[in-house]
Amino acid sequence: MSKLTRHQLWSLEEYAEQRPAFRHQVMEHKRFRQLMLGEHLRLTFEDEMTIRYQVQEMLRIERIFEGPAIQEELDAYNPLIPDGTNLKATMMLEYPNASERRERLAQLAGIEHKIWLQVGDDWCCYAIADEDLDRSDEHKTSSVHFLRFELTPEAILDLKQGAALVIGVDHPQMDTGPIPVPDAVRDALAEDLSITYAS
Image (cartoon, rainbow, N blue to C red; front, side, top):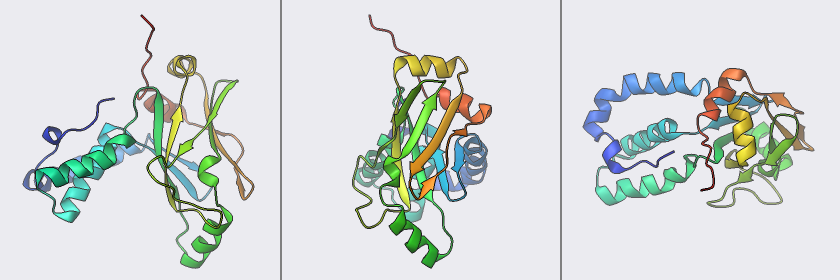
């Protein structure tokens, strides 16, 4: 999946005009790219469209219009677009109550390394978390993490051919067990992957 460039973005003025329709399009798109693991952990699988929306929103909120500053945003967000051999997700721990959130984030230290993905009956991997910077320590975790699931060519082929996709958490404070991914979500995620053959 290609990375975003400045030429693919709208100017602030253009985005103001396009935003309502684009936002609706992105929200519909995300319906097939989100998964709840239990009651409080949400995964949103990113792709070019979701990241483009995030970049456009950031430029809008911060009123960024100068070339170097736009490129800084692209450099920050482009690594979240999958590369063809992986799935990339934003993980959010959602606790609306602030005191409960503080308590749970302290209990869930390291949970970002305990998210696993299985294709078919055999192949399984754990997420690689927060490659840009650490977002937790031994005392607490963050409410937001960025995950990468790296798939083998065989797992990619199986997924594209309709193999079951299962995701779960095995942290001692949040053990969801295997959660089957709905077919519509699995099919959308399979589109992020490409099969390459050695020459």
